[in-house]
Length: 143
Image (cartoon, rainbow, N blue to C red; front, top):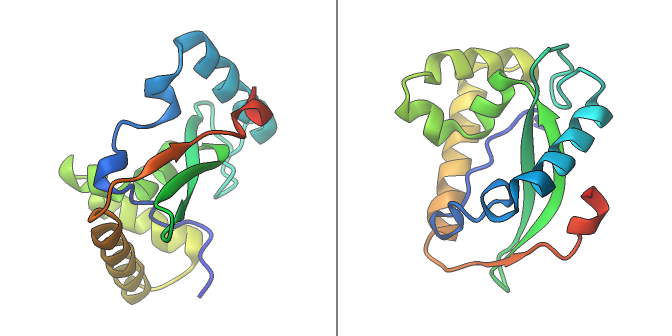
């Protein structure tokens, strides 16, 4: 089943290796505002119009070379961002709302939610067994 909205669990060694934390604030502001402009006031995942978008970094993980590469920066609504980062969402007690949003956006069942979450957690556990290198060679396409 192809999902519009999915979990993007970051390997433990990649926590805090995001652009927002590693770039000067002014540079990050340029990048995120370009993503917001591309979104034209709508979440780039669920399509919902929203007055407040959040920038989300999309990463590719090469499981052979252990390189985390920047793929895209998208503008998303808060509910989609809470699904994407479900681990944090669970910690702050908002999983039930995130689950409902996941089901609605993907037009799927609770069993589909549990299956996708189980697969994401398994991939996270495996990837967290390794140290990852950060590759942002294509950052200039977002500035």
